[in-house]
Length: 492
Ligand SMILES: Cc1cc2nc3c(=O)[nH]c(=O)nc-3n(C[C@H](O)[C@H](O)[C@H](O)COP(=O)(O)OP(=O)(O)OC[C@H]3O[C@@H](n4cnc5c(N)ncnc54)[C@H](O)[C@@H]3O)c2cc1C
Image 1 (cartoon, rainbow, N blue to C red):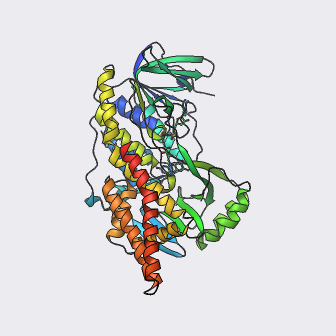
Image 2: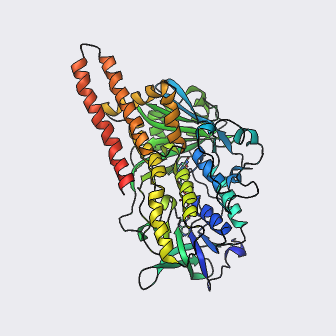
Image 3: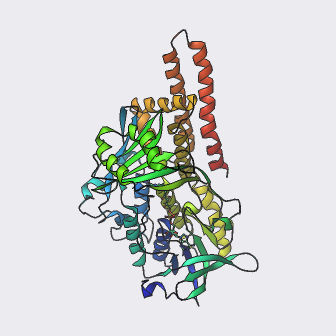
């Protein structure tokens, strides 16, 4: 039964903002705009708790964005599990990569009218401790059951007096005669199709977005691989409070992170959008042998239960919002490989920049709003491109299927093993706290050169001519997996 309050929005008024989708990004946009005094309508096709295997580990950059948005308490009271860094496991060896020191980063920005009454600080609960998040010297990430986190975001949004919520499926973006967006048509159970009008319509309908094409018919993602996920119960994680990335020359990357005191998520990459016909047999042959010993009992239990869930891994570079009355944001606008868990971080940071740019404008002045939205594309580029390029380039290395990529994979791991700046800088990219694409380029090619050096060392003096030739091939491969994505991100 849908609550009556979700079926009664006023369709006779013009809202300042209409938001399509209440996933991670929709409620953040709605809450921020409502706190800025805007009259907001948010439409979600299903307000019930979603059960998805996406958006379960938030990098420190995402937590910082939640603070800027005065929504960080959305990680409270859901048995969320703090994350202090990553552990990369390669062919039986491992390296721990702690998150960056707070002192090395700029202070978190507090958005005017939006951050108030301590809503940028976590509360104490059974798993989130104030001393760890507020007082520790390093940044923290957090992992959680996605649906519980979403419920919290939605609850924060629902408490804003300027927000009206509707349950219904948006079936059309409404346009005026001169092709400006003026609202949306919503299919509401028992009410039929209802038109809602707004000065600005936000498309936040996520990975399978129906309306991203309103920006441009060519704005469609490419899908190159999939993740198959399982829940591991009472797993003994090799490095507690860390995200684990298990890589090796003979298998696809495997991600493992604890999302509650009892549940650990495992995501196993499959290098095609089309899944194997027999997932269990594939798991037994290509995944199980590479699972660390301590995880095997919980992994084997999950395998015999056979509850597999899968998601496509999509890539979609951002695009300028150049349609009057429309703002596409979140996964509808921009997607990257989920390997590095950066989607929510990018989306929430985009919301921070968005609110800075348009939060104080009068939305009925559509031309001025459009000008700011055009700028938004450039203002968020450095931040987003680092996370996006890192995700696709690392995936190419970690899913290595040829000699050169395997050399790069090994070089990357050995580079991390050197410690010092060789982990301190890369982890800032991963965390979403170092928005410098050119520095990312330098670091990526430093790892590639290190891979070349390791290969020369392995070949020895007599193998030098061959090693030099191979070195050239390794560098060409590195350029191929990095440069086109950097170009698309920076020049789109
Ligand atoms: C396998 C996988 C794992 C991931 N893991 C992580 C991770 O660990 N960390 C991370 O930061 N990111 C991760 N991501 C990415 C992350 O999930 C997304 O970046 C994030 O969910 C995007 O939020 P969004 O609000 O744009 O979309 P969504 O969260 O997908 O929300 C879209 C909302 O719109 C609603 N909707 C859709 N169509 C309509 C319609 N027509 N009418 C009304 N409502 C509609 C949907 O019901 C949904 O509630 C992962 C992605 C994948 C694929």
